[in-house]
Amino acid sequence: MTQEDAASDDSDPLFALHNGTCYRTPVDLQLTPDRGGRYLVIGGCLAEPLPAVGARINPGMQGDFVLLNNLDVLPPIPAEQTAAYEFQIIHLPLRTILGSAYFRLPDEITAHEEFLRETEAYLARYLANALRLNTERKLTSFVFGFLVPQQNPLGRFQPRYDLRNLVHFIERLNMFLAAQLASRQNAWFVDLDQISSGMGKKLCQDDMVWSYTHGTTLSDGDHDHDLQRIHAPAPMQRHYAQKWVEFFEATLHEVFAMARTLRASDPVKLVVVDLDDTLWRGVAAEGTLGILEGWPMGFIETLLILKRRGILLGIVSKNDEAFIRANWQRIVEGQISLDDFAAVRINFRSKVVNLAGILADLNLRPQNVVLIDDHPVERAAVQAAMPRVRVLGQHPYYLKRVLLWAAETQSATISFESAVRTQMVKAQIRRESARRSLAPSQFLGTLELEASVSCLRSTGDLEMARALELLNKTNQFNTTGERHTLESCHRRFFAGHTLYVLQAQDRFTRYGLVGVAWVENGCIEQMAVSCRVLGLQLEDAFLAHIALSVVTQGVAVSARLRHTEANMACRSFYRRNGFVQVAEDATLWAGSRGEPPRVPPHVKLRVGWPGHLVKTDTAPGAEEMLPAQAPT
Image 1 (cartoon, rainbow, N blue to C red):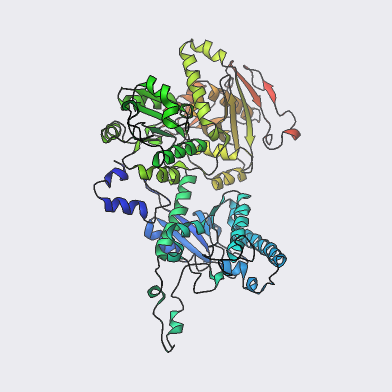
Image 2: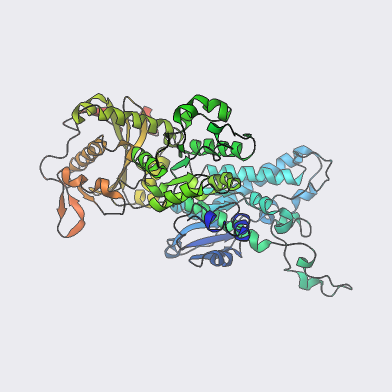
């Protein structure tokens, strides 16, 4: 049962679930609890409460605080201490960046433009110092933007988008900061102002008492200094409504959700929807359709956005398929196409059977699926048969926010493979249909299958984001199941490891990057291959090239294989390619000392030299064709 259904008998818990400090970061799609870990907090007074608040949210999350208020250089942190951090949070105090000079500038716009350039230069230098651990280790870094004042200090009638308006000046600093972080690896902008706006700036932000450069929450920190006044004021919370603790909680929920996305925890790969009273109001076949405006239109927009993120869409509906297809455009008013859905099951069979068929066609596991259905009996039947499927649909007003804002439907980057995943999966289905009409050897021979292998040498390679995505989201053909961060990959590259990547295409589609393998001193420490190409023997071609590359360097080839809950697809992989399990280490397989594995004859394999993905014009022999039976 989902949290949505569990709370349905009592409106108060349901309201609290969707309106508390997790409003921006819904937990409805979370299957596994966040694990604990250590993180570093660097910044001024705004950041100081974060470790205590983080432990309050999750006792397993332990934060250390380093004050960086008026200092320009990050103090030294012992290497053994930094190695324990999963990520760091950085808050750059606005007071340090902006100072008080802004309020003494001449009124001319040119003076403000010059001051903005100077401030941006100082901000870049200050940011570089604060991000030292990111520069050195690629440590995951979440950097807070600046809180933007609620009103133009010069008045409501003054130009809104003018640098003489402090609101716009700080907005420009946020734009600059976000651009600086976008140019770095593994450094992410946290829109603190958006969090404050969502909660209500008047409840959590101080720009009505202290200096504008305070840039933080309202505080009673100096109340003691005012007790000797003729009329001693009451504490600040007696004058203004305050939710600063909730603001810090919401901020950390945002950071923890971003970390969860980077770890690829419980990722959603497929959203399957019912039709009547789910995709639209009413029952189409009965002529009781309601207006599409309102939540149905918002839900349709949501599905199209999820598709752009690389999440597949499916339909499972008890309906007359011929009627639905004939009337589709009229029903949805052209807002979404049946072609936007990777799999469609419209019939009167059991939804459990239909959903199982879609999972088999798409080679997905139940825990990567969300089903949206308005009918409680259908939701209960699916959850009884597939407990790991996440089920929503009782409350249509929550669908858009949960599906778009949950950590489990987001990714740090949208790769080429993500953007065209629906088309690739449809091509995969056509390919599998062709497979069923031919003998295996005949089928493979008709594919016109081409592949290329290249090596990545640093996290700066253009294909690194997709390689990391594949490592962290592939389960069925993943020889160890190990997950990675950009920081851990940086350490591997620094230690001399090589990351091989495999790209492929056939007459049906271009699959993009579908294979990755970490190799160290002749040992294939991990190999992962996308489920979209399993059965095409691309993994065998990939192994053949790696093995030959290792052997030609005068090193014996070996490989790691650790059983996981999901990697049945690769457990016989090394044995069928001539590797032998090492008696002293059950996870280690030794390559044959005789002839190395061969590239299957139906695969045309090309080799890209290291670095060719970055600069193809300077890599000699970047696309040397390999003979099918004798890779060289």
